Image (cartoon, rainbow, N blue to C red; front, side, top):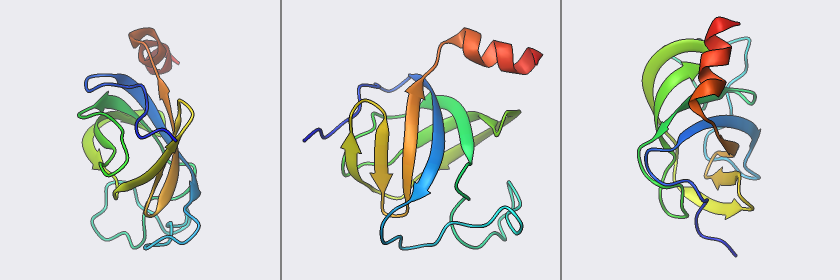
Length: 118
């Protein structure tokens, strides 16, 4: 069983919430009620939420996904994202936290430049 994903600190990545954990501590929010950037949201971010940015630390069991966000759902918006603790990783791209399952894929600079021009 793997304890970390192959992305060191400083990696440019895309992080997508693809599911809730089997027994999430906090249920995912719904897109009908979720307001990106609001401090008044209840629940965790909805399934389908995608961010791009730079990892501030490696993704490993016991740690957290810590991302300096540059894009959220395709829109350029700087910010900071920190997940609940990671309880499992699998393959080269999946991380499960107390609340969510995330797909993480490495990007290169051209990926974000293409999106900004689109």
